[in-house]
Image (cartoon, rainbow, N blue to C red; front, side):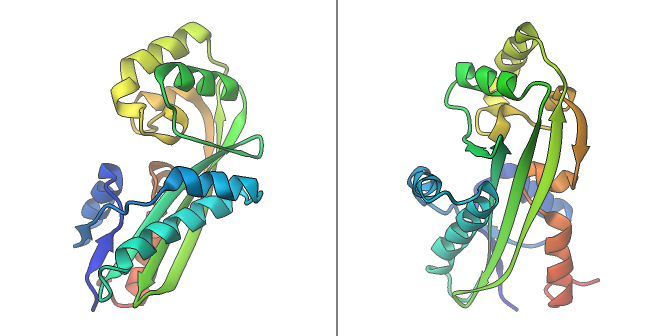
Length: 198
């Protein structure tokens, strides 16, 4: 059985895998994500497919150095009005981004790809539909100021497991996928392949 390697430095993804009782290593996949996103946007690649491609790129990067491992790459893209939004670059950007989505619906595409022996052996993209409540400028500015250190690396500038839950009136889809990993489909695949016991 191959060793499982998470091609990510994400603490929340690591925590989800730990909580599920998986044994794994982590390895940060250093790819030029901004350049890849710009190239895909120029080619009019959909946000869903962007997430899938970035997850695969990260897994392949680590798999090229650890050929005997089962490598898990993950990525998440927020889609709003058919556009892929980036992580906020500043507090002001986070405020603007949240206010633009206030009272409207957006989508989170959470992708996971497994590479073994240099080949993709499994992939899954989960899409979650999220509807924000109508938010006041004052609340959003205070929310971002209070939470900036925690949300600065988050797609959409919110953490659903924290105060970010107050931003929403409705969420349709898998909770783990909002956190950045379609955990249940992954566990199903690992169980089917005998990587984990059931």
